[in-house]
Image (cartoon, rainbow, N blue to C red; front, side):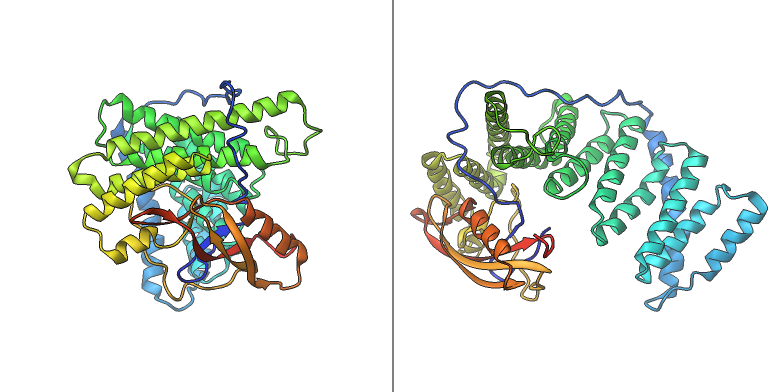
Amino acid sequence: MLDPGIPGTGTISHAAGRNRSLRAICKGSVRRPPQMRKPEATTAPMRQKYALQTIAAVLLTSSAATARAEQGPSEIDVSPYERNIATIERDGGALDYRLSEQFLSVGLAYRANGETGEAIEAFQQALHVNRINKGLHHLVHIPIVDLLIETYATVGDWQAVDQHQRFRFWIHRREVDAHSDEFVDAAMTFAAWETRAHDLDTGVATYRKLRDAIEALDDALGTISDRGTEDDPRLVRILNSQAQAHLNLAMYVGNTEEDIATGGQRMGEDFGDIIERRNLIIESFISGKQALERVVALTNNPEQEIEHGLALANLADWELVFDRPQSSDENYRDAYRMLKAAGLSEDELALEFGTPRAMKYFSVERRSPIPENDTAPANAYVAASFKVTKSGKVRSIEVTAANPPDNTRMLREARATLRNSRFRPSIGDDGPFEDAMTIRYVFPDVSI
């Protein structure tokens, strides 16, 4: 669960920063972990077929969107759609293909009226009718699946969101050419969700979510690499996403008390388990670093000086998390000098490096200021101030606010997580330096 936090500060989610030192684990030889089952071979329809199906999907939603726009901000009356549904069912039966559009219109109306449960039920009915008439796996289902994903997310039903994200990607694997741009985009969307949801309760083991994300990104990268070009704008995003997934995997494997494969309770710890975890962390370190180094190489040109500087900072973050302080310090200095030479103002440099930041993601895009009104508290949180050393470690933790204020277990968890977290330190002309920051540590609920 993410929270915008306090203006001018960072934010960390529950279980997002539980990182102990990985240097001791990153020793020894690399052994490849057991590979997950590879996806079934995809079909290869022509791109023209995909375009026609996409047009069909747009037509499916157009009348509902138009009706919604004509209603304006007031509550939408769903009775006309319900009368249409009754008429179609009487004349054509309960599975008439025309019902899909009507159920979709009803769902959009319910969602606009804030009736989320009714909207979900209507979207599900629209999808059911669509699958009966179009087949179980058809690209025309995608707009409805996307609406279900968005709507389930608003109520925090992460299991349903994950199920529909997997169904969405499964459709693309079956119906889209694996060497097409559409497949690359679908793989990136799926991987982004699985990486972001690795610590959410989706009913799928964290290890599986992250391995699935990595495999999807590997497929997308393979498609672009097969074309023999490195000017695809998605390439850098894929590489940064690979690094993020590998980082999350290494942190999970290094800190969890769960059984890696199942996510269930671990029955003791044996030598084989220790070796497997060590090898997974080593593999993640190597793979993630290679991805970030490739981004550094791709952006090393006069037209991308800012992107290159940010890529160096990402590589420094990686080295800091895995306890390579000397390499990290050098890359931080180079990144700062490059961005300053590229013409960034003092305020722009301060936005990038002026305060410590949680290492949530890798990007070569500039940071945006946090809106001043972006301070809505979560149901359960701990706000704490502390100092971040030049090596990214946390010390002098002081709790400044909490909700609920008397939940000692939540306070203890927050302190423990912050002590084990790593942050990008503040950086200036002389490199990293110790600085203070405030952060909001967000919990999923008050029952923790």
